[in-house]
Amino acid sequence: DAGVTQSPTHLIKTRGQHVTLRCSPISGHKSVSWYQQVLGQGPQFIFQYYEKEERGRGNFPDRFSARQFPNYSSELNVNALLLGDSALYLCASSLEGSYQPQHFGDGTRLSIL
Amino acid sequence: RKEVEQDPGPFNVPEGATVAFNCTYSNSASQSFFWYRQDCRKEPKLLMSVYSSGNEDGRFTAQLNRASQYISLLIRDSKLSDSATYLCVETGFQKLVFGTGTRLLVSP
Image 1 (cartoon, chains in turn blue, brown):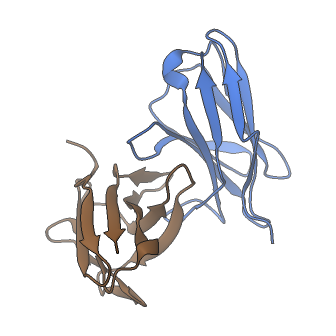
Image 2: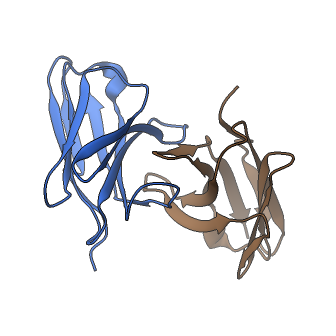
Image 3: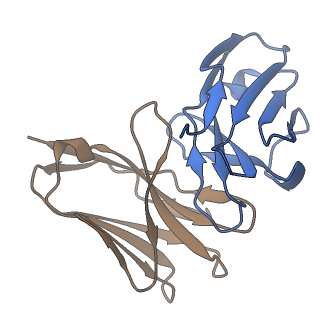
């Protein structure tokens, strides 16, 4: 079975632009979470979605938004990109999301110039 | 205070050595804990769950001490392929909370 898949793998944007990152969870998993990982740090929680509803939001500005589709895939949108948004964006899926281990995709490496 | 704290290392050990990592957490209500392994520029991969009764998987042993709020990971007979960053994770209702990771370097 396919694991969590993310696209694109790499992306280069300039300040002020917006970006959409995509994620498909493991088949049968209904929860998708998004994390941001900057160099030298552990992943930081951005959002969790379950059954198309937002279940949790981390300490990120409103420029970050996400949604989950009926097939449980998800998009992360970031507007008005800043240099500090350069990071590895990780998507993770789990069966339900509460107190469960999550399985990560390869991530999207976003570079802001 | 950070929710999950780890010594960033690096821990430099020779092949065959035994190495242990500790991690402390601040939320006494945390329900579940995990160790993830992350190779350079790759995604985190689940290594093992952590239980109060201890959890052993081959050369790896994880332990949870709720009274002192720390988690440990013991690696026996280290292999070159064990070189990676080990992330301590607590899970709440909605999210995983990661430590910064402990880097392990195993040398020949």
